[in-house]
Image (cartoon, rainbow, N blue to C red; front, side, top):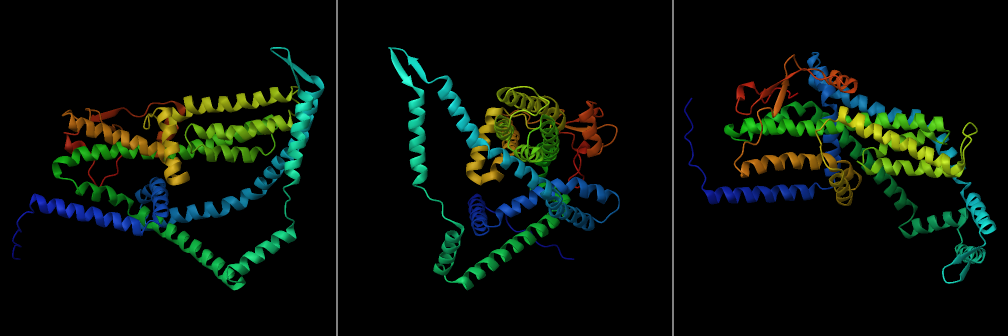
Length: 437
């Protein structure tokens, strides 16, 4: 076969021009596909979380396509059956919380009456006397006047407003068409998410090889080490976050049930869901429990006042958070994130303002990834070796499975003694086609 003659290399100006055009094309594609980008990011996250299961099935001689299909099917079953199994208990919990909150106006009125009875006047400096009873009565009268001016519409009025709005929008037929269009859009978005997750899960093991092939051969060893460190950040975050949410949610459910709070299952689910917001989530989950404790009061087996009972609930949540920060997080996530709480909190607010709930959720791993990448760039700029001799470790006794590594961390046992691998020792690094530990 005749050898194809090699074309001349591109000049510097040509390379810059092609790079600029490629960047413009990428930006244009992102702009055109901006409506599906959140779903695509969600599919990438789900596929990344499913990788250990799919890799395990593939190692047990199950075709990777079938393994990815089984992983996606398992996820769909969990999402479909989970709410069905939990909805009755959640409804009962919400009803119990609502019944407790209904007592709030009576509690507020009783508190005001006690304040007027016990402290009708207060002596202020300068001989000024403040009549508490008169001030409270005046505020109550103003509040009643304001409420009386606001009349809630009845059911018939709401239905009439809805029909008028539907007719103004183009009639009931147009409204039905809009509803059908919304249903179809939701269905297509769900199918796009499922199929995207499947293909990303099936071909996820090839992404490292493709990405590594984009770099020059002399940079590939360092890129492998950098990619390994970034993989540790995201791997520890996602799998650790799932385990932390399940653990904290279960502990909160058990503790609040023992303390006699209404809707303990709802409080546990709320604590587990808010666990995805670093630092701020546990505080937000604690507020409803304290409010419920103040309104309901202690159960019969706790002979304490309402305030003391609320302080007991506060102490219980504080101890759970200390258990999480000092025992669970170091053993489950390790030092892969290693970010100051102020930095994480600022990142959560910035991510929430930029991308909503998803931005707040991904703030911590994104900041940790920027930290790892920034350390590498700083070392290259300053002319220092970007990685120490022990930048990447490989277990000497073979690769422990994710379940065994997790059990070792929870039990406080050390992992197998690692062998230090230098980026210069290319032959000791995993190849691009081999799964990194």
